[in-house]
Image (cartoon, rainbow, N blue to C red):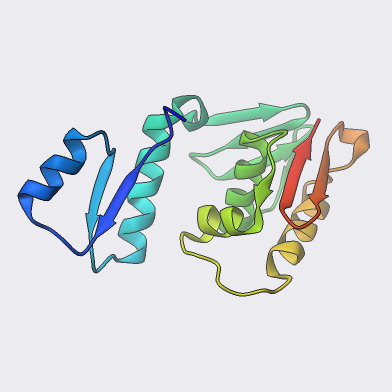
Length: 155
């Protein structure tokens, strides 16, 4: 599993422990209490460094084009109106084609916090995204539910 970014979060802010963790190979170190916005920014920075191919301004898959700087999406050149969270969900799926994304992972990556409830929230959001982006066989993509896991975008 080399290449997987590791963020160390702890209440211990002693310089010696921070130096030890970073020297041992941890990619980042955050001291409690953690502010949600700052924590999300740390995670985004880790992911940009670990997966630089995913940090391009434009992402194109088949008839879909996503501009992360403008947070705009088009399907076959036609603009699609997406909210900020819809855009982040779309980018997450389209950057991970073929990978199963758990509901917990989707929630953490889009909203920046842990998902602790058993609800159909993610399912509802995914369903609306599927409709908004017309993710269907005619566009050569399918957003497939994976039993007891999450979802997978397939070409």
